Image (cartoon, rainbow, N blue to C red):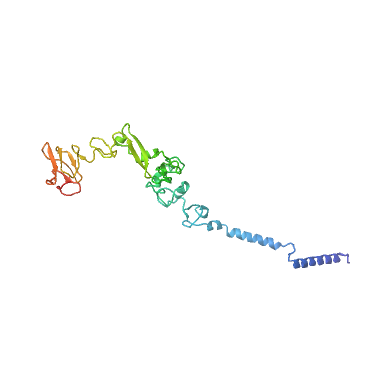
Length: 293
């Protein structure tokens, strides 16, 4: 018996068909249940997750690979554009790559600041960073030789690298000797800037002389006393000279050295253009005895 349901269903079916046709003409796909779409998306996602679980590490560069940032390296350390092992020591200076990267020194150079002092010697035994001038930059990256601001105070001694400083006190211990008359009571050492280089100022050092005198003092502050003189304070010379001496006295000249061993209590060692024999002396240069100094 027809209770009207068939007519309703036919009407509904007709409306659905009309809707689908209208959607096709407009280019819009009708919404409807598409169970396969959600299931397929899940499968694809699962495949991507399982297949690329290690994709992050595989995409990173190995040791020796080129890099721009540490995040690009498997070792998480990019140093000067190369992936390196943090526990390695590329320059073999006794400091690990990771340590040098942390303090800003060059892991590929055993002497980062090129001042003749190796990187390992510019940090403490406990790897503490030494900062001689207290400017926040370690000695390992500040040179004892270079002077960035041209004020005659080298970078490692200059607490203000970018400021022209007229006080050269930090350089006194570097350029001035502390021996001989320079280390005596009353000596006042200073440093001055000459031609872009710090030099020692001896003007307030009593008894200082650039040329050594024979007076049992170290007048030129070089750590030697009366150098250039032989027994009796007679200066070495290529001119004829006479040295009064006794047996056992050390005698030397520019070319000859030796100990007088003659039996006479008092002897004379002579040299002149006419008499070239040296008595009891041995040539400094390994030649046979004889000849003017």
